[in-house]
Length: 206
Image (cartoon, rainbow, N blue to C red):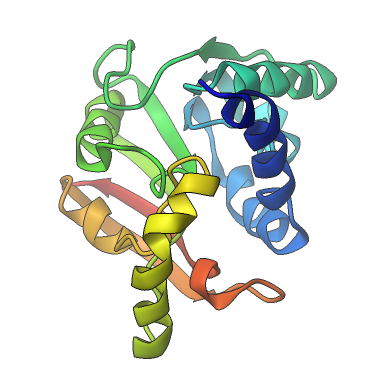
């Protein structure tokens, strides 16, 4: 890990992923989480202020970055949330099958190297009636924006920790064995269109 990845990137991600439009997206979906909850890619803990404590039976969180994980632990302490943290990726989740009522994934599918494998792991973790609640940015519907996304994406990942701005989020979810029950989509205000097309909703196992 180089200096940028260890000392600069975590602060950059915390700032960009904590912008007002993204914070409003988090506020829409995080309160829907209930029961035994698993958050994939907890990052610096930006979702934590929006959980309803009374709806949480257990809370587990994955984050491969040690630096971001340490930031999230401080937020959990401030929010008085009891969280079981795992410093690992989502491709191999060290937790039992058919266990969680809710899996939360926000602004993370863009970065996971083997995203289909990770989503299959999420499906394994969920109870039969469980929900994967998602909020992600991805491929825009407009041809011109899509063209620029493809041009910029190879360079974007180099400065944004492997983030991809042109992933087909609905396809990634459905191809991993989920049915999308509800989904909304739009360009976020005050956000560059190449990185600001959002999909959010929830999916269940097929």
